[in-house]
Length: 370
Ligand SMILES: [Zn+2]
Image (cartoon, rainbow, N blue to C red; front, side, top):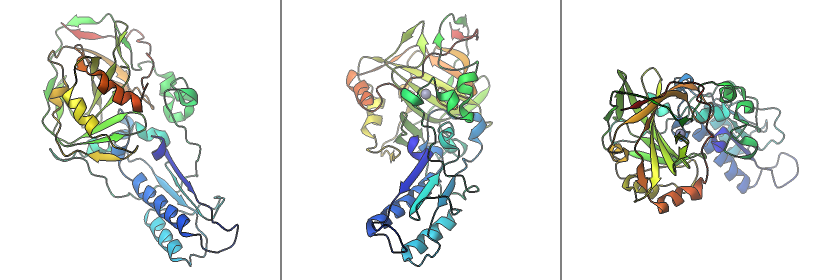
């Protein structure tokens, strides 16, 4: 999300120059920046959409560059230096102001793909993932106040993703991208997906691209002889995938990962109709601020999100958000589940349109349950 990709806090002293202390307002802002630095070191529970297999195992490199005056006589300066040192921060001599504290994520938006620091270490059943302590930072990064912010329109829109940064190049060059218009599926006796879901704790986060729900451990599916743990799910409006050209009001993507980091996404289409109790439970726990995770007091039973008819379409595709990594097993449930107009409107207030356009199916095999 944009606010994790780059946090830059520029606080200028009230007086033009000199070693005089900045006023309290500035100090508070600095403390805020340090808190942000700690936050930036948190795992990817705060991040986005589908996890990227290649990145899931790697910690996201973070660097904190703090520019401080050389003479840290001020207690606030001293505290700041101590904290910066603790975070593995380095001084950034090129910073323009001595009062600039800049927190830079070198991985930038690619962090969105690594949805699942929590996947590698799922919380126990019934408990929600907890933020880790700030990890030691990577070598100092060049302050980068111009990290690309991807989105669904304008300069950061889907047509630009592939060119925004090298890590996103697959968005432009990939040949097995998602979403697709699902047509001409081969009807076969597809093995049923074995859903092993149970009531679990959850946390809701508005990550800047969607509403995401990080689910406690203990939920998994088994398909093609492989077991995948449910990591998170999130929503798109309208549905990204189409069935014979038809787009639905919304879709929920249930992102699962196996121990080797392979991803399997179950898509549940949401069609305008009656109110959906599970969706309402999530909306009831919406955080007021972007990036803020709200731990729900109640539990969520993901079985209640699944349609009664478990037949599905399946094909190999990609993440639908940068970095658009391929090798994702998609399973799109054939039967949509209802969602009320009011419930769609709640999501629309936050994200009126967060669907990637249809990608070429490029002759891929699509199978569907008989
Ligand atoms: Zn998605």
